[in-house]
Image (cartoon, rainbow, N blue to C red; front, side, top):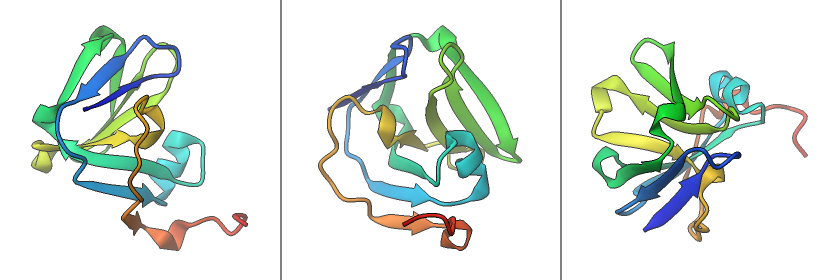
Length: 119
């Protein structure tokens, strides 16, 4: 089991199941969402993710057709990314994990958008 939370602690979650895939997404939308070079995600079964506190603080945003991103409406921490046509899967931001994830990131997506300013 993994646990996680937003920056302010208003939203807390548990993942009861395996992380099936990890990724770094370099798309410009993830860059804007995270305010960083990429978005790091852990892909899990939607049924495995349980919000244990602060569900009322979660704000959702349709960033493009069929894609919904969720974040804490109090502190703005990015929490999840999900495609409507794959509602059985959800990508949880690795940076919000409280339980350390010991695996390696398996995939890099949209590397054509990787910023040139990275070392």
